[in-house]
Image (cartoon, rainbow, N blue to C red):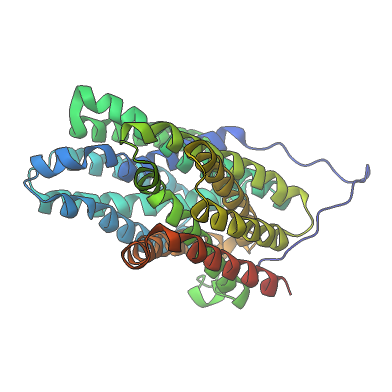
Length: 399
């Protein structure tokens, strides 16, 4: 199961690392971007969707929760399936099925149909996002996986930085239904790129007579600890990602348009931290300690971010710093999870996506409760407490 391998010392006798599979990583990044855009790009159109579907705004907003639940369940099943039958059917079929679901969502005339297509779209996205990470891991050696997975995960951050603003701009011309068709087109392009970049297989269906990989074999105590660390990290990220715009609006009286630039800087911090975290995961001696240090630093940043509001510029800078530190932790965690036997890698990384969905739901629930009870003054201690919990699990797991 995963091992926290030491970084090799500089030695001219060591063989050079193989070339990174950049074409595959670009295709995987696009696939992640399309999957994330299938849900996130609804944000600017909630009012329009509520009107067109003859539903209340809270009902339409809950489509995201429906998508998230279906995403998490499907990721677990697809990860296990990819270990049995190979990853390529999921890598190509998943985005194509997602494109069909986005086309179906664009034709919805009522809330029930929209909820059904949203659930199916979430299931299709979950059917290949964890498998994308398993494929990227299989095509790189251990000391490249932090960077490789960092680039794959950057596709999610690009959704906030590029996808949502671009969807809002395109939506002024073609409406929310047309935006869904555009996302479907991106998914088709991702499927084509993944088909082309996986022609040379590195895995396949199980060998005849080989025992079927089991969930119990994948869930070692160390993997369970890593998954729990992932839930803590996603809660910390989600508490800020979901509520940062509301925090700025409440604290400084900003309009929706005025929070666009702060949110773009927030997304840039996430991308920068993810890229930096990938480098550190491959170069530093201990991935667990890298994760622990980043989470501990983000705990302090969260206390300052929500507890000290000297001005808008300073708060936006603190938000950038917080998400940058938080994002550094993720590639180390992912690289540690990927360092498992190939026959259970899809299952483990599928479970990671499932646990991430639980983290997002936990962030939404905890954040809503905290706002009702204490307001944003309670967000700092709450986020810091969860971050320190993740830190402790990393230190204990290393031992």
